[in-house]
Length: 207
Image (spheres, rainbow, N blue to C red):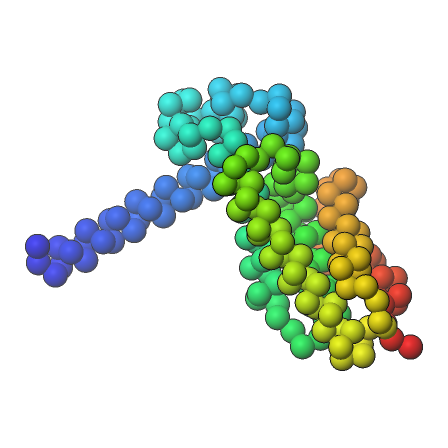
């Protein structure tokens, strides 16, 4: 095969892969919405196929089972949060924590079904899928805890238990999935993050 033919073949393969990934993302979005509306346990693959507008055999081409869709939702959500932390690396631990809060709220505003599945249906994952998400959750927790430890070490934050403080911070941010979606069209993630973080940060700041 000539060089030009190889390049064309690679380009076609790349386009096919991109189209496949885009379709998977579309399926995940629709399925997360249905899980949010009727509950994970109340859906079937036929209901999910109807929601996406595909035949059930075609849906199976993209996802072999309902639990694999649930895993994809979890993976997409936690990767977005981890990516946000890495992108927003800052020397200021307060800015880093605020950015993490904004990212969580933005996910809640834009993908409420993802977040509800992540919060309510983690226990439904099994085997290697559950192990992978558990590790990703731990990685995320450690990233946030590192910001708090840095604040303590630099004297920005008062001495405190970094593990419990991290649980408190993430609990405050994540619980917004219960009440933020109805007001997301009126209050931006940045506005809500500032309202949540201000009293939390006031308690953390060193005298």
